[in-house]
Image: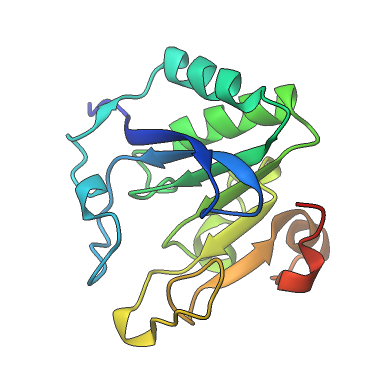
Length: 173
């Protein structure tokens, strides 16, 4: 059995979601998108072992008042080898910080691959879809390519359909 791994933790990230956030980059991805901005996260054997201590470290970093949330990226946090760790981290985060947000990036699609997964109960915003180099657009704030969607997860689960977030709705940060 392969041990779940992560690549790095950023304790003050302002580029992966609104406001100052803590970000964790999960290790391992099979999509291998052309010109991925994190190719060092593709190898499932790279990085560091993901343990309960990893969760404790992330939660401790998130205690700072100026930290508005947690961002989970990769690699691929929703890959079958990583989703258990992603779920455990997201659940622990939401239990401790119910008023802070979780943003997550995945190549999997919300409505096709993820809508029945437990992890979505804890995620506020999901950016889904594989990065497509030919659709790269520098004007996009939270996505790398125009096929990707910025999804309001609680609203989407309630409405039972994909509900996108308008950038104007992201306020207070």
